[in-house]
Length: 312
Image (cartoon, rainbow, N blue to C red):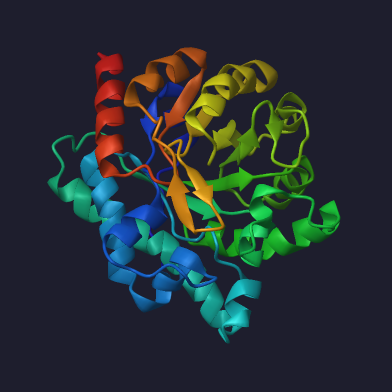
C-alpha cells in the first residue's frame, strides 16, 4: 500500500515558498546512465530503481523540499511500445511515486531540518513527450481535447492512487492540452499544479500566455500555476503575469538557459540560471521555485539558501 500523504500540501504552498528539485535527466546522466531510449528516465523505473532514488536523494540533500517523480515520459502507450503490458505499466507508474517517497524517507532521517516535511509531486508530462520527437515543444498534435483527456486520465488515476502529495501537470505546450488536463484531474482527490512551457509571452503552440494561464483560475484542484522548462528570462516575465491572471500561487522552474541543438544533440550557450533570481520570483507571487533541465543539485542548494534567507 502506498504511504498516506500529508493532507495539507495546498496549505504548505500558500504559506510557502517551497523549494523544488532540479532536472531528473541531467542528474541520472551525470551518474552514468544512458537516457537515449524513447522512455527517457522512465526506463530506469524498471531497470535501475535505486538510481532514481539516488537522484531524488541528491536534490533533497541539497535542500529541495519537493521531488518531481521520474514519470514525465511514462505512459501506458509508451510502455506498450516496449512490450510492457498494462498491469506492469501501472505498477511502474506507481513505483515512480514510491521511489520518490523512499528518497524522502531516507533524506528526512538525516537532514538537519527534520521539522520541515518533504513532498512528492507526480510528474505528468504532455502527450508530445510520449511521441519522443520534440512535439512536446510544439503542441498542436492534431488531437481533440476529448482525445487528449482520454490519453491522460488513465495514468493520472494510477499516479493519484499511488499517494503523491500533488500532481505536476508540467511542460504543457498548448492551451488545448491544458484544458484536457484540467478536465482529467477532476475528482481524483489530489491537488495539482499546472505549468506551461513557453517562449516569450506565448505558449510553445503560440497562444497568448495570459489566456492559457487563465484556464486554471477557476480550477479548484489547481493549487499553483506557472511555467517550467523555459529560459530563466521567460520565467522572470511569466511569474507576475501568472499571479495576476489567476490569483493563485505561482510555480516556476526554468531550465539552465542553455539551448538544445537537435542537429548535434548537445547543449549550446551559457547558463543564465542564477539563484539570485528567486527574490524576484517570490516578490512576483511564486511559492514553488526550482529548476528543470540542466539545473543540478549545486544550483538547487544555492537556490534553497536564497529561499532560507528570505524566510528569516
